[in-house]
Length: 309
Image (tube, rainbow, N blue to C red):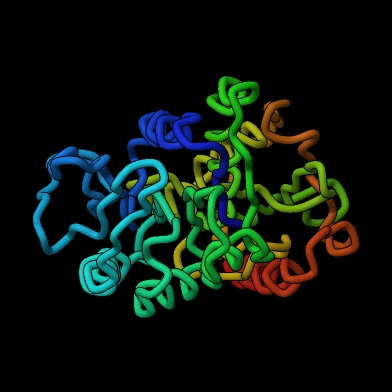
């Protein structure tokens, strides 16, 4: 899901985006910003399209996309600059963690290459944080407002302070849907049969796993997540790695499972992580698995564990 802000001019949309991104500085950012420079006599200013990341930006005729002449006078647009410079800024945007589009308005309506590239990214899975001007009914503006992958948020003087806290939370939620996860199947000898370590979350029973943090390996994430969710310290056994797609709607991530052995069996789940952790008999575990795509992964891990003895 992409997030686009809209609302009256100078209500604080760009400031809200800037504050949000400042709280999430580890993100790899793609896309663009538009900035105004008062460099044209008698006009409100020139509009330039620049890299999404804050910092030094070159302003030249190449990336000048328009001139705003003031109330009632209209604007002069330079669609070629959008098509050349703007499209270049979006060329590899899917490789970023987040795509910034600040802002989409009326000036680019005849920049067909640029508009086409924006539409491609709207249909993609890399999250977009953008602004669409409230004024105007261009085809691209209308498509953004009605796109099924877009959440449109109107910024007002009444809600902008609350959005300062809410927007980062919404964005992190969307970004987490793209972050791959890792976990582990951990077996032990039970009283009557083998048991496997499971956790119960909001959606039911599953196996301990979680998001891979920046700079972390999948193996490291699996060990850390099992410890955080169950209190069990594990070591990973070599030779087993099983990848499955997330079973949650709107998620585009892969879960990598490993096979682990526990150094102890005393459970100490963290309430903020899971509702419950348990050692479950393997014959019962398969019936409890919440996500169907985890079943073949569990069966493969159980077969690999038996071969390890």
